[in-house]
Image (tube, rainbow, N blue to C red; front, side):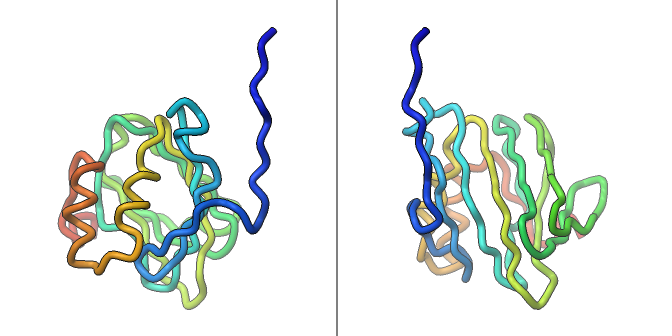
Length: 149
């Protein structure tokens, strides 16, 4: 039986990125998983979160470690607090989230297949007006900010 190397990413390890006023940390890159998946830790400050978007060829999950975010889909809005798990299957439709609280929220996001972590690398540190153009290369559909309101 062939085995692969087991890796551990320590609390102070992983590529750190600056995204929309928060900080993201890539826990495991697609390059390390044969592009099967990637895992990103997201520290989302108050008022932050991605605009509505859809990527039907990516399965995405979020685990809310700390804090809470309002998760929006075409079916409505729901508060996802610490301990919540959000599953966006392939062809899952438009979605977005926003931290409406006055403290940061910490999420762990897994994407299958890998690829979105490359987008996060590219948008890290960019001014907001430049993010949408870069995101369009990775996300199938970008919607106006009020699309799911």
